[in-house]
Image 1: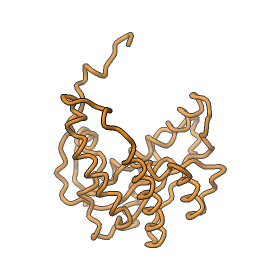
Image 2: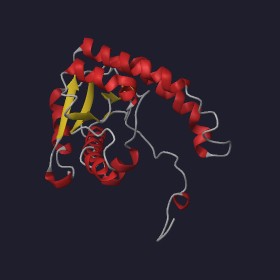
Image 3: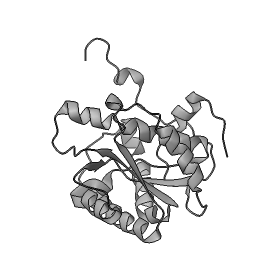
Image 4: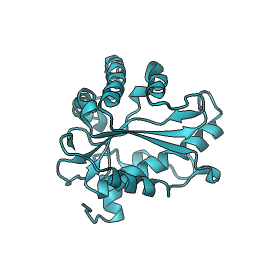
Length: 216
């Protein structure tokens, strides 16, 4: 199924999908492969193409990854963030809804038809800013392209990184045979068709509050 969205439509309506993931509808490998082929056209530093994509369909492995995520999500949710944003801040008004949505995903991660862990070659622990920016710049555009390709095909995902906390990355690497000493995981992504396709623009901070011309 193709939605025939314009480039602007795809760019402005692709975001994390949690409660509208259809966990009961199977996902075809061929469609995911189409999206990955598109992802491979993303920019990559020095044409290194050091990316690897691990897709998980096995129920037991999905459950194990979901368990890692849920354990770390509980820790993350318990962190004191009450003063992060103040009343009147758009992000304060959205906080409860986002928390509820994130909790739902944590409780249902294992139900996603497929999970994706994108990896980039090299360990990025404590590397200089240049090396880190170069490496992340060689995997994050590809993952974003993948998510936009999903959107065009009536599918969705959510960008999560919580499974990487507190040794979770090493656990996931051992579970899936990822060479942890040579590759860094960029996140954990559910893959599913969406319930409906009528996604709208998100509410964001005004442009003039985040834009600087010539100086901060």
